[in-house]
Structure formats: C-alpha cells, structure tokens
Image (cartoon, rainbow, N blue to C red; front, side):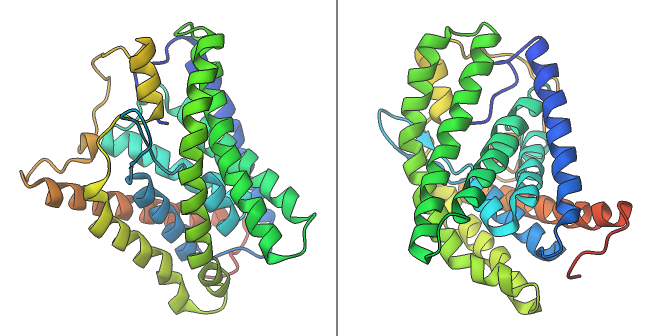
Length: 306
C-alpha cells in the first residue's frame, strides 16, 4: 500500500507530512511513559521482522497481490506507541534505501501505515482487549482488528487520492476497500501466526536475554527462504491505479541504493533479493535500536531492559 512518488502531489503531501510528524512525536513521547515495555533489542527485532514480512507479496485475485502492513502485529507485540514507531522506521527505510514510496509522499505513507494501521489499529485492539477475558476472545479481537486496520488504511489512501484529484471518491473507495478487504484476510492469518509464535518471546525478553533473538531469527528465516518467491503481481493500490489509469510514471527526485529490493552487484535474482532483504533488516534493526535508546536518553528515562 506504499503510495509511489508520482501518485500524490500538491498540498496533500504537506498536510500528511505535518500530521505524521505530530503523530510520530506523540507516539515517541507516549512510549516513554509506559513502565513495562520491551527492550531496545526486542524493538529492533520486531521492526526487522515487519520489514521482512512486508517483502512477502502474496497473490489474491485478478493478477493482484497484497502484503502485510503489520501495524496491529507491531502494536500487539510492543504496545501501540512503539508499534507506531516501528512501522515508521520500516516505511522510512523502504523509501530511503529501496525507493519503495517516495520522499514527498513519505508523510502520507507513514500516516496510512503507522498512524492509522498501527496507531488506530492498536488503539482499537487495546480497547477491545479491555472488554474480554479469555485468550480466545483476545485472539478474535486481534484478528478482527488486523483486518480492520488494512481496510481503514485503504480508506485513508482513497481519501487522499480523491482530495488530490487523482480519481473520484465514489470510484476509488469501492475499488480500494474491496481489494484490501481480501488482502486483510492474509493480514489476519499472518498476524495471528506471528503473534502466537512471538508474543511469549517478547514478554520473556523483559527478563530473559536469549528470547530477544527470536524475532530476529524469524525475520532471517522469512528473508532467506520465502522473500525471493514473493508474488510479482501488482499490489492492491497499483492494481487499482492501473485499472483507473491514474498511475503516472515520473522521474523520482531521489533513488535509493537498492531500488525495488534488488542488490545491484549481482545478476542472480535469489541472491540479489536475499542480500537486499538482509541489508534492509540490518538497517531496520540498527535504526530502531539506536532510536529507542536515544529516545529514552533524550527524555531522561531509562528503558526497562538494556
């Protein structure tokens, strides 16, 4: 659901950038108020995992693919404020290193995937969990929220496209929401599986150092074994843009060192994707780890774990 560079122009880019800066800043401050939180290592590991999972485009219908947004997964594992920050790091690395989304639309992509996906999605999940008591009910809440986060993000993209004059609101909403309602099913399955696999490790990372490596190991397995076999079909947004002919090609103002997740110094497709994924994981993990420590240092708060 990354909006490409040429799809949004004008004041909508400045507005979404301002909203994203405010939202991320608020999330950063809120994250320091939580006494019980994961370690910097766990935060970096989950961020790297979300990056790796977003490389896995899965086919849906009519030559379309989707990929995990991961907002609710990140918020469920880390807490909503840190979930917002994790997705923000991922989206920024994707734009700067891999040209996945452009710099002028970075605010819009952060707003859609981090603020709406992880923020609003995480808030709804936490609100729902307060009203239930059983593990099954909480997993049901997680599943519904994961699906809703994709639909809500697609609706936000639709509003931005309509405001920018790219397509009529009445045309883009059914196409975007309908397509992403199906993609949301994949989001739900992946979220439930990863949460079941990792939530005990994240909780345990607060007291047991070896458990902090579990998300990194999971991300490494995803990148090494699965990412090179991801679907090459256009994602939901690209498919809608092609169908309604508002996907305009244009020369990007900035090109990352590995555009389209291709390592430029090898011709072997599998190796190229694997190296690009490994580099992306490293950048996401290290950036998230450093950001987490600096955030707590600047606000003179000590994280619960090193």
